[in-house]
Image (cartoon, rainbow, N blue to C red; front, side):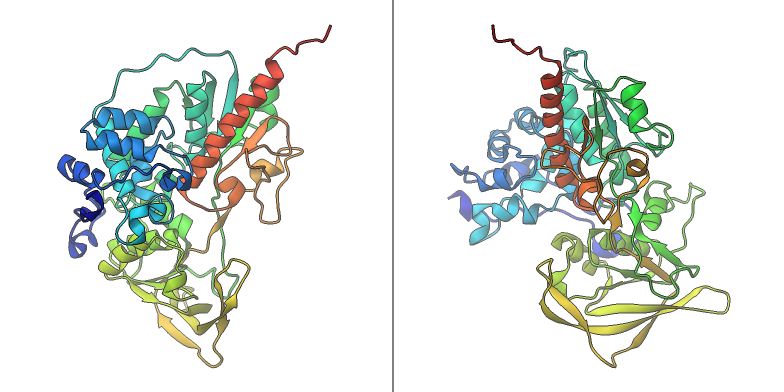
Length: 468
């Protein structure tokens, strides 16, 4: 029976080797491996994996095509719902979404849906089809931000016939895909740039170095440039700190700054004159995917790298795969530990971090057990770099320059389930609405907003029938 076939393992770089380079950790499946893994799918009548996918990819259908050796058919099925399969196959938390809902996972290993999606996406990039002509409908939509939510929204609108233009604040396109996720998890030229080119082939125009709220505003785009609707997918790039003593010392970074310099500005590459100081011993505070990216980057830049997290390993919000890879690479994990002060030397540089031990109490509002300080447990960790990976908030610039755009106490834009905001014709989604989340959730929000924008414009422009 198909469910007795063991899950096909994925080839990876040796941990001792990869901890010294920025080449991709996972090699992915070859054709034979992908077809064998695809054959494990039971093709359930009511596929829970589809419901669990934020963009509702027809997973059993693309896997069936792959089982039959029809990569082109599998790619066409995925393309109906996702423009970024190679990216999603690499960075989505499949273990808590599609794979987490796979029937085979109840008593064994679920189908490796993410790795199969990656295989199909990579095959599709290597075998680009002929450009499809799309008739334009004469309506214009602006998208602010070229991250996953903006790209997903723009792709769907372009397929519907809209003239779509993305405005990106940075000099490179991709948002968090280029500045936040390291090369060893998501190659920029081989994957991100090529999938963005596929979006451009749909007719989407992208303009970089445009800061919404400064270079352009919501009002100027709608009143002066004639855009009938706007989608805000500007992400959440404003880092949070703990507010403890010593955060202004030399050697303290936000994970955002550290990763942006390493990824977007290529600090890891000696051919680029954009170095970053990782120190001899770097402590990363936090337990999410960004913390794992930062600590693994610091390790590759030559530092002894340590994770400090105030809860236990069971509460780590990072993907299990990323935690596993970090441990393989020699990252030290200090669980149930919380910083109280960053220590400096006479020159104003980091020399260590003062911490306390924690215990876990009753669950808090997030559902996780609340950390409680263990009295008299103060101790110090020697280090010369501290990286804060505590989450991010949206930049307030767009909201502060847009009249009638409601935000909540965390600075996130308030939007309904379809992305509609308090300002007519303005929609929003992804991290700008939720705060820092995952690539696939941002894409799902972008797709919902695209459908809502289509309904909004059609409702405004379709002549109403008069009762006679």
